[in-house]
Image 1: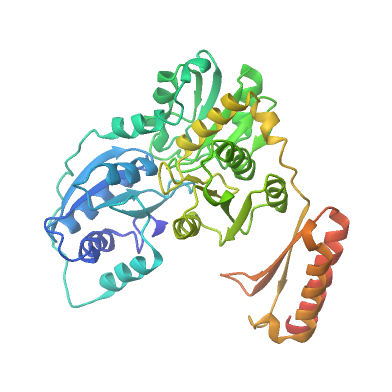
Image 2 (image 1 turned 180 degrees about the vertical axis):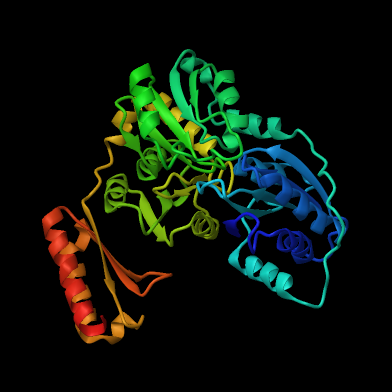
Length: 437
């Protein structure tokens, strides 16, 4: 759930009802369920936490707050401490401060599936029950985050080689401000921080993983060896090499997949990535005999595919990367430490590792349609799509899909030559426009 804080469905009454519905949706047989709640730095976080806890308490649940911590910390702590039956994160990730959202993790530290989400929605909408009224109380808190930080430190077993290694980190004025600077300093890094002064309204404001430009300047000016930009809730990371070049999730997946494969920790010699990952990643992985399984955009789809296939690594271009041996959700801090470990064991800089990925040119064109018909049922459209697919063969990729929110067909084409693929994409656009536009 995500939207404007204070407006439906993130108004006080609905949030309270959602807290109660979450408890009702837990598996039968759990007596006195325990929920763990964490949040990011948005000014709306505290009242949303209080309303959720009040609703859940009305259904017999005990709720504990860990305060401002990254999303993956809640996922890990929920799994690590057996008394917690579910974890709740109040955050809108990389969105502006006016927004907020609610994410829920099972007692195993996994995001709720779509099926469970639909079940919770149905319970919220059911008029046959009422939520407890009254003013919400202060949510009792515990300091548990040290267990999460100890868990992270295990990713970098010998940090001594990084003593004095200068890095710049951008905490997006978000949840990682409470943990990231201290974690890296405790490992011996020389840390330059930015985006570490949250005021409730400046989360993601011209900083963080969606705005790495200033971090790139700081890295170059300070002589840092690399930079890491987190998003508002800390579940993704975007990197900057020592030259100021941005390194996205595709490059991270490649370098970490090869590292895990060398260590014998890449079961099935495969990773999961989304349909938006560049064909260059697929080709580079193929050269290392590593397969790539694609899934829809969204880290929950990455996670579900990894769980289904027993895969150790998956992620997105945007910087959500999941290392299932550590946690079944994206974790920016964990990703940063894995990248540093890869640099350590390979003896290569981030820039050198990122250069292994050759991004192929990409064209994205849209065409407005009268209706979203099955493209296979329109012979002329089916023919031109099949023809372009034959042309790109093993050195490119075609993705044709309808927009989920607008009457548009989107054509994404990747290949070796920009002008060539643009012309091929336009062929599809022209036929679609003539037939169903």
